[in-house]
Length: 409
Image: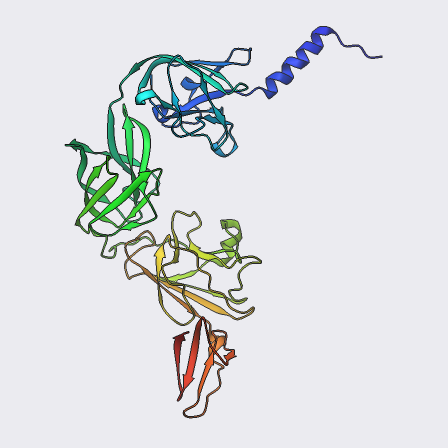
């Protein structure tokens, strides 16, 4: 019989424990929510607790997460409710999971050279630290040039209102307001619902709201934190209301339930471009997927995509099509060849969200074979060319006296 020494068994056990051990880190506005910050990593004490002695200031609003894991895979520990308050020197009960809230300190105090003792099994956190009242400021945080890099513009306080003047935005930009504690993000404040700023307006804001989109131009801002109101004054169009004289066009593709939602699937559905006009013909027809019809036009990265506005398009009628709009749901019968034409305003590029493009869906085989009718007679056909005796709840082609017109019933 094969024998194992006590030491070899212990070594194997230690290796197993080491392989399954989890490291943790503190994450929050104080370190920009960095997912792998060595300075905020806990040390395993071997007794079920983890300790972090942080050199510096930790502002209110933070969490604990497992080390070197992205948010969607991480173990996350935070406050059990939004109004739970951590008090220095007292054990704080944690909640494990995505439902947990940011941990707030009593009175919003900043922690000076704090020592954190964390027990993931007992779900407790003890903090020993000096405290100081945090300095609260606000800034506008956005991708001002319409690209992927975000930065801030400081707001200046006068009588409780925080303002900034002549803030310039390029096409495709969006933004929100950051509440900062000692210069670190404490709270994200944005719109109560999705919106695009096009002119002078006042916006209702809320904590953890929806990013505001904004047309290209120059704007003044006044933010009232007590009322959560943001007054925006448009100074000028900043060139955003006119086409770019030197546009940069991108390749565009169909994406959706029928074509796939990623670049590898949709590469075969690339539009042909002639200057500012994009065209594609789908021989199989716009049949949708097995369970849903949704589709869009995109550039392969989701940085730029086109969707519908308030009204869904139908065949043979030109519609406004908006940057980052909603999903299209237009479909045809199978094997009805469909041509889709996207026309950008002459001189505008696909980044210019201030100018609606035009979408035309052409289904020639659907209506061109409608037979002529007798003088005075009226007949209705759907957009696939099938005659309908009692049209209702849709868009139809009305044929009378040799003329065909679109009608909505």
